[in-house]
Length: 169
Image 1 (cartoon, helix red, strand yellow):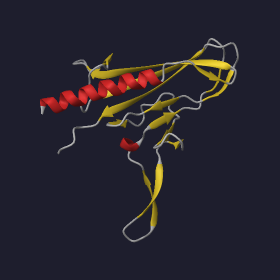
Image 2 (tube, rainbow, N blue to C red):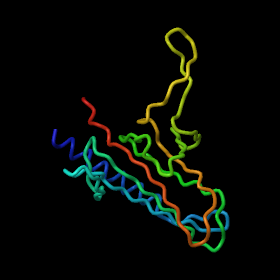
Image 3 (tube, rainbow, N blue to C red):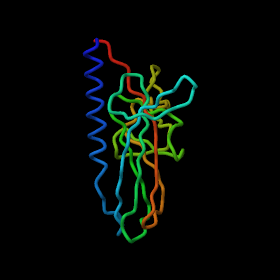
Image 4 (cartoon, helix red, strand yellow):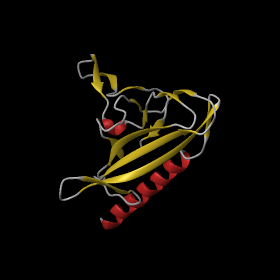
């Protein structure tokens, strides 16, 4: 059992590092240049009930991770229609209500985004098509519509996920 926990911790660390690498290079956008920086922190609640953010280099099932994505306009031109997107790693579940800014879109595939909570049509046992909420564990991306970003200015978005519990074999 301890090896499985260690394995998940290693896998989590790899996912966090990979995600940070993928989002840390400059991107040209509408005549400007966006530089992004993604950080991941474990949310630890102290004995006094206050939250503390710790490095997320190791994490266990059930723990909460806060992602903070900072977008900075390093160019000389205004960036219009800024829409930063935060990937949600496999084996984690988005925690509703933790997105900042709070108005956020979500996606299951990285292509189609809709306001949170996501809904889908399914056929029930009677053959009727009904709308149901998509479980948060299925969300794979969050996106914010931030609009304009002046040269030299930055914008920050954040959200929390919970690492999924180990699956029973």
